[in-house]
Image (cartoon, rainbow, N blue to C red):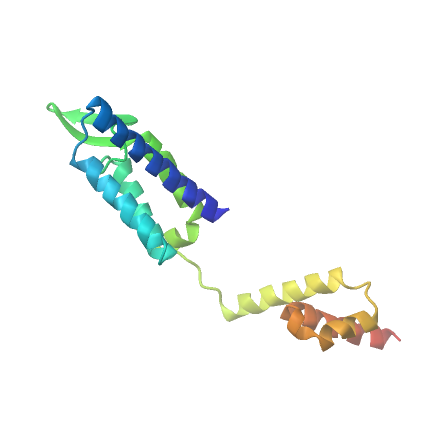
Length: 179
């Protein structure tokens, strides 16, 4: 789903650029250098995506941030508002690009956490607790299986996740203790 949303963002930007280019050449709409920089950013990010999705995401995110504050453009039309000081546009926000940015940020939370340094590294104790929860979950799911079925999982452990194999061994031990 994450990949689909990112590709949808690219599709919206590319469609906007193509539409603006068509109108620019057929109806003489004026585009400025910010638009051409926006084209370059999207094109470079999309081409880099073929080699490295991670770097492409950084470039796309940066492009969307710059587009949100109107430092670059992806269309001949501004879908936003700007603040004017002494007759000069000082700061503007493009609402459509801001929506795309929020959508992008929502599917790339890990990237944002990594950039901001707020990602939480699990302690060894937390990792062990998480593993134990997974094993217990597998034990609950497979508690009705026979010893032979559980032994089959252990004998073919390369086919199964390690938590299921450990859970199977524990269930066999429990069942033998009951007998």
